[in-house]
Image (tube, rainbow, N blue to C red; front, side, top):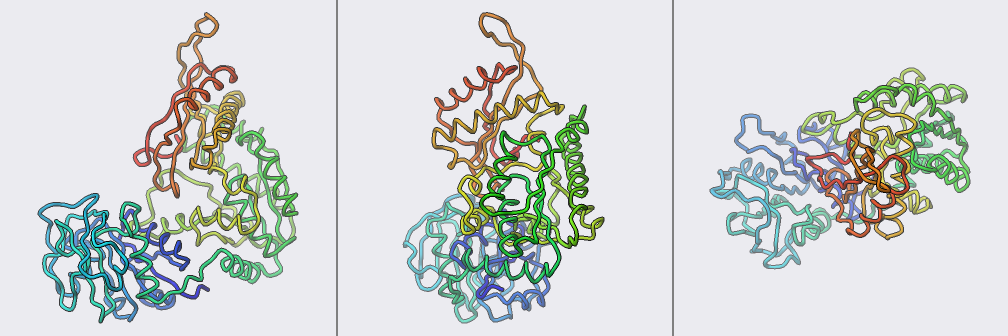
Length: 512
């Protein structure tokens, strides 16, 4: 499918996804496989180069991950990063030892050889370290190409065997010239060409969707989020009128959500959209429920029931299109095993079995920022493409405690004010996600010389590149003050606004 490809083998590093993203930013396609992927699958993937990620293990741990040695005999260039470097050193007869001084954070790199991998890298630069072991004895056939004060072997190479290794992380933004180092590996050493673009992705994806769908109809659930809207637009490009979109209004959406999405897809893309107002059903089922996981499950199950009922009215349906993204795919097959369920998402498994449908997941190779680029390439408006992510269970998980029509109205109004103000101030585009949360606490206040005992609203705004990690947004104080004043003055029943300054981790972005 893709001409030149780089394979990243995952040893469990928190930065593995970043490696693949950086390679793709250089317009070369890259995928992540677990370290123990069978050689046959790797041969079939046919990479022009392999990158071994870092990982939390020490090479001497009893259960330290090991590669099938045939992978290193495939004849393609290999770049080991951190644990990947230590693995190569150990495998080729070098010695890895516990570092006397654990290196974590910034270190000054001194380049000893600026050919190939470190070509055009400053003789002295800042790099990001994260390791407790170091190379004590160089393996045969390797040369030192860079060092730091604490790591005599910060980078090594064996050009004859096309093997390269770095003790630091070139994929993180804290490493100066990190992107350039990866490009040197991908372009100079592996000989890849920058041919992976959204245009080429669209053409290939359309062809695959057409071949898969054949003469059967495709249905797609629209939620108002970017992923489902882009999925629908891409599938529509491929199969045209054979696509029917179903928009379920669960009564837990943002202000004007249903109308906005429907108008965009119907008017601009001339799609067949069925809108179902099921708000009464969802609110009835959520009555008295306060546990966040129960809320998610009820909403997920009800969504499937409503969706199924509507889908049953459409003849000759064979496929369900869904906006699964690459991080979801990686998490389910990563070296760390299926990741712990932090919170459950819509589960369509039951729907597929019951209706005997197959999945079409055209975005499953893409990261979130790539989905936005794809939306742009498909001609979608900035308003849809650059919308902040919105959770499947909607405002229900931003309404801590019981979900009622009245409480949802309060949070919807507060949320609308927040979004209006950050858009007017020109900071909406700099924030990954901003929303209001209604807390199940009341606090004492004074309004018009009278004592009040009313609701508390928390404002949450974070900056992020992919939602995997996030930091709280440094919104100017005067803007926070304006948001707070408007919410307290305009939303009946709220007398206090607080700002959430937690990062992810340890906190998640959403409160529930």
